[in-house]
Length: 338
Image 1 (cartoon, rainbow, N blue to C red):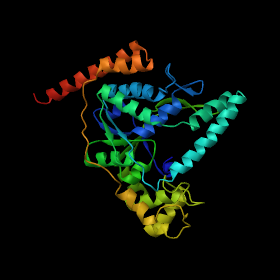
Image 2 (cartoon, rainbow, N blue to C red; image 1 turned 30 degrees about the horizontal axis):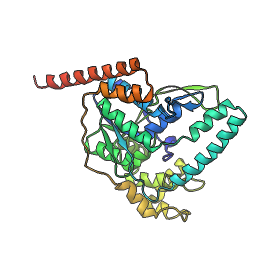
Image 3 (cartoon, rainbow, N blue to C red; image 1 turned 120 degrees about the vertical axis):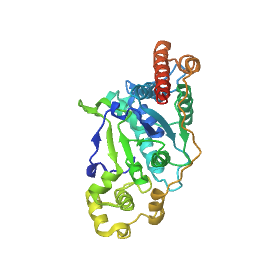
């Protein structure tokens, strides 16, 4: 879900090539959900002959390869245990069950648009998909990090330390966690169809810099956190009734942190101060290594071709490109010493 700040932000367009040479800490769960909802055939996710979904590893394979070809060093950060007060889990489960019911009805009436829409809305990221993704990244030589809690928070910590140039995610929450730079649309660039409409849009990467956001809005970071909470986060879904981003901005400018004290608060939401503190100092770990290794073509063949029915020719093509980029990267690194 994420916090809805789009209306008051002014992102800059950026190309993949414009991020050449940069490390990006990518929100893995966010990205995998994108692949599961977008990479489909006749409304259904891609599957192998055993009935296992493969949309997530298909997207991860080809998109990550494209990022590497553009000179980007991707690192994927996986969510750990969510905080106990992450209420969006309950809301999301309700929406998925409702979508599953509508999906059954759409299939009974042969509503093709409905099948596609509700299949996407009922998508679930299963444990085996997460393990598949980690295994594929290892075979590709791409590092991944296990966060203790929220992946975006861990990615933000890595970017704040200078271990990554930016956090890549669709959600604006990374800005509340303090990400110096946020890149959106990294893994969904290209022509996209708007659901249930015969309309297409061109999606391009966007760069949002926290310092510019705070400067343009004339806010401190804690005030930006309060603004986000007023609008609604994964921990207080929906936010305060009747308050959108622009009204929230006015309230925070007028009252600062006290803006949260003067609004109606749901009984099942976490304590205001605790929620602000969670965004300001989220759980993270220093126990990670960012090492881009040589890809393993033989292991990839066994996993993708033999295990999940991928075409050997296409897999070989991707891994040959990865090997070439890895070799080029080593040569460029060595040239710095002469």
